[in-house]
Amino acid sequence: MVIKPRDMKKRYFLNSILTLLLICHTAFLPAETSISTLDRIASHRVINIGYRDAAPYSYQTSDGHVVGYVVDLCKDVTEVLKKRLHLKDLAVNYIIVPRNMRTTMLNHRIIDMDCSLNTDTVKRENLVLFSHHYISVNTRFGTHAGNSIHSYADLAGRTISVAKGSTDLIDLNSLNRVHHLNILLLTPPSMKSSFAALSSHKSFATAMNEISLRQLIENSENPEGYQISHLVSGAPQDLGIMLRHDDLELKKIVDATLVARFKRRDFKNFYEQWFNSSLPDKNINLHFPLTAEMYHYLTKKA
Image (cartoon, rainbow, N blue to C red):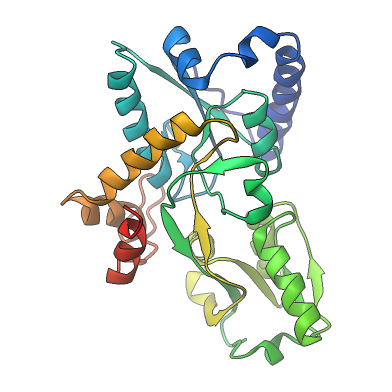
């Protein structure tokens, strides 16, 4: 059964309430915490996968299906788990996970994997595990057409919107301090609301990973009215599936599954389905083809 709330606020409010109830519930189940994730999956024949609205990585279509590049990678993992655990059936339970609840829901065993947009950072590695990386992206600036950003000096004294709690915000704060740019930072709760601040002219620019920025621009009423900077903020972001900190056995399976997918002959078609073709149920194309450099990045640790 798929619950379809009328709007995003209601959905996330309901999800937050359910999350709190689940966390309280798990506090009274100490026996479960001593069981490994693989043993629990084998016992219950269910795997709980976290996702959120972050196309093309993960999103829900209008007919209630959960899809996306990372969702498909996690489907590969579930197929491997079925064979490894000798299961006839393995139910997949998709759970909407607010960005600021990822580590909490993992560590309270509400979800087993977070299959969405997750940047691997040193700080987060103290709390969770990350899989073999599934893509590397840069943080770029989106502006209205004509408001070009060629250098950091073009940001001086400007108002920039960036999602609260994001890696983009950390990078932009560092950039602001190092270059003494006197940037006024608006920090709305999500990338979508950060882009909305740009659209409504509350900010001169918005900063976020280039894939999400492309998706929001292409999904806007006037895609031609925006542009993306060549200038980047901070180092490239490595993205991976997020796992519990003690799930080393599951991580090995996830890593091997991802590498196997990346090395398949049809991987280019698989990748371009999500990054260089019309997205299912969205009718937008991100025009982010698989390059030789990206392919080398995905397979270099294999």
